[in-house]
Image (cartoon, rainbow, N blue to C red; front, side, top):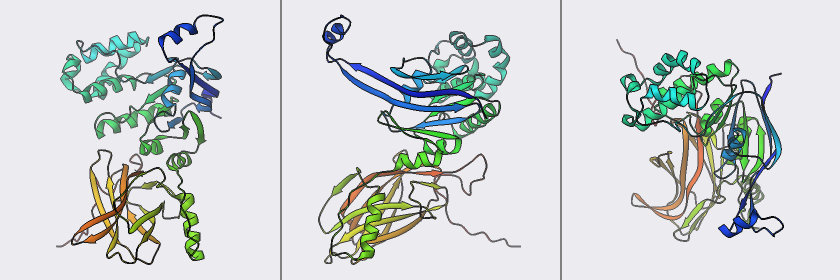
Length: 412
C-alpha cells in the first residue's frame, strides 16, 4: 500500500465578516457582544493523497478549492478538523511571484530559490537542465522585463519542475505556454510521479483532469460532493436537473420519455430567451454510444442529443439549431435539423471531430424562412461539453480545430 503524504479529516475553515471597522475593533475587546457574520469556505472536507499519486480538485468558482490549498501550504489556518502533511511541499499558487524584473532569468532562479529556502547547491547542479527546459535561448541571461508573458511563465515553470519535493501543489498552472512546452511539462510530471512525487492539482480544465488524475475531489459551495473515481467526479460536476410538466393527454410511451428527460435534463438554470410563441424547447439529454448520460466525449466519438420540443400545428418549417463555441467564444459550427410537428422528441447523433477541450453551445428552436431562421426560443451557454483525448498514449486522427472527412486513393 502506498504511503499517504497528505491526509485531511473533517477540515473546516470559516471567516468572520465585519460590517464596519467599528465592529472589527469591538471584536478584540473582551466581554462585549461581538457583531459579525460567519462565512464558511470549507465544510467538513476529508480526503488523502498517496505517494506518486495525482489528485485533482474541481468545482465551480467559490467552492473552496484555493482556500483548501492555502491551508495545506500553511498560508491560512484551519478553523477545525485536522490535516497531516508528510514531506516537503512546493506550491504553484502564484506562478513567478517574487521575480525581479531587473534581474536576468538565471539570477531570478538563484534569488527565488534562496528566498524560498531551497537547496541552492541543488539548484546550481540543475541550472543547465532548467535553462534547456525553459528554452529561452539568449533571453535566459537577459532582464526578465524584456520577456513576454509566455516567456515569464516558462521560466517559472522550468524552475518549479526541477525541484525535488515530496508534494507538488498546482493551482491552474498547467495550461501555460504553447502546446510544445505543455507537452514537456506533462512528460516531466510523469517522470516526477515515477520518482514518487505526489501532485495536488486544482483546475477547471476537465480534459486535463481526466488525462492526468488518479482520483478527483469535487467541491461545491464549500462542501465535499465526491472523492474517488475521476470519471464519476467529472460526471457529477456536470449534473443538473430541471422540472418539466407532463401533459395528461400524452401516450404512455411519451410520458415515459418525458419522465426520463426530467431526471437528466441539462437545461436547468441555463439562460433562455423567448422571442415568440408557437414552438418551445422542453428538455435536453446528452448520452454516449452506450446510452450513459454524460457531458464528456472522446475526440472523434459521438454524442446523442435527445431534445424534447413542442410545435404548434400552424407553424411551417420548424427546425432545431445547435451552435458550438470554443473556450475563446469562437463559433465553431452551427448544425440545423428539420422538425416533425406531431412529434415530441428528436434524437441527433453528433460526431465530435473537434480538438480536445471544452465547448459550450446554444440550442435554438426556430422557423426556417428563405435561408434564414426566425427564432422562437433559445438557450445560450449550455454545457460545457468536454472533448477528451489521451495524447500521451495515442496518435490523434487529425490536428487543428476541426477534423474533416477525407478519402485517399493511391495511383501509379
